Structures are given as structure tokens and as C-alpha cells.
Image (cartoon, rainbow, N blue to C red; front, top):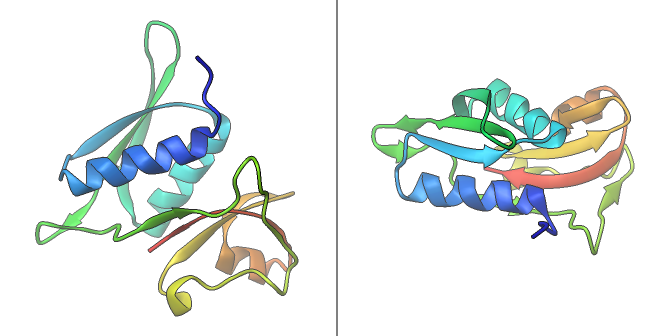
Length: 131
């Protein structure tokens, strides 16, 4: 059975593993998910990630971070969905939690944070928000 929204599935698995205090979570891999994982690692939301081959497909394993037993990721929200895409011009990219969170933006230059998109003066599809 095919998945309608693989990114939403990734965010849900990440949210559930975070709330259950798991140290890692396994997700079916894709180029978009690997790009999001790189961004999560760069921003400090996850400690590391690995890609390995399962019997049928590649698996993306994210290693979650905690601070004094509390999760680093407090919330995740899917913004642009397959049925309702959300695009923003360079000046209209949203600030998440007054700049304390991160918006993941898919641009023509690749996947980047809202801050990087503003610095590069480029717009794109706002995939999700993390805080």
C-alpha cells in the first residue's frame, strides 16, 4: 500500500518516538527525508542519523536528543500537504515561535531553514515547522 504523505509519516514517527523517550527511530528513506534529517542534525534537534539497507529498501535511522531527560523537540507540524501546498515568496517566509523554532523550506537551491532562505533571498515550499 502506498503512502499518501511520507513526510507527515516521518514527522509522526519522530513525534511518537520523542514522546515515548526512545533513543532512535527508523523511517523508510527518501531523498527528501534525508535532506530534512541533515537539517535536523545541523540545527541540533537530533544527535545523528544513519542510512542503511534493509531487505527491500533503505532505512533512515534518526538518533534523538534529550536534555536532562526532556526532549529537545517540543513540537512538529506539517505545513505544506499534498492536497494543499503552501508556497512563500522570499519576504513572506514565516518565523516559527518568534524565531525560536525552525521552518523547513524546500527551495530551488535545496532544503534549508527559514533563516537560510531569508539570507539567500529565496522563497519556496514550507514543508514543516519544528520547535
